Length: 245
Image (cartoon, rainbow, N blue to C red; front, side, top):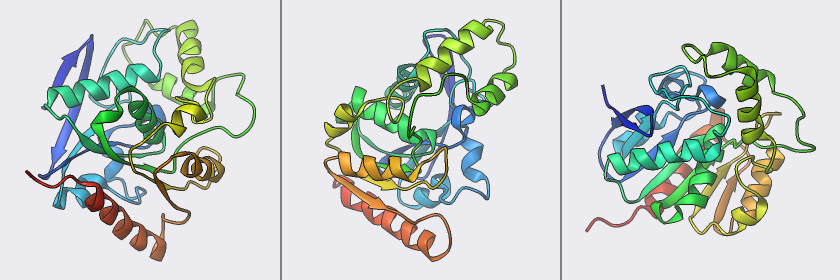
């Protein structure tokens, strides 16, 4: 089984296809695992659709209910996840790649763009999460559902989980970075809008306006719009893939 260990974490990943690499982050919040891409509800499954032309890397996020595991601490935050993503690229000896992420994957992408922008050739953010209005004062139902699913984590006490939740969701309009950071992003980005409370249209629209080199699709998840989006995504990736040397 393809996995590696870094900093007390065991990270499981899978690879599909060949070509220029694309690192992908599945939706489902803190339950982001590879199998989510294979569900019928996923509008675009990069492990199948992109693998015809690219080397697609997918991963189980730590403690998401899949095969990646790590201790949970009160200091865990977005950078903790990004350290896993960077470690995976290092493990695979990948210097540059595209990024594709849906839902929480949008925040994973933005934090990677903050931490190691040189590694990102382009990025596609599909229905990114974010907050419109005042910060929440308590854990969300979705966070609580994830917490209740944890197994073999006696260190994840209520106090530790409260701190973890605050670290993830108490600041930033997209949680991981602020608007000033987004304005500094130089990588080409394609933003596919969300349309519900967890993935507000307003967040996707604002991201597209703030990102200096961005494209935006308001409709993309079903019917003819999805067919158009699939073509647009593949064209975007092709346009920003470095020529082979």
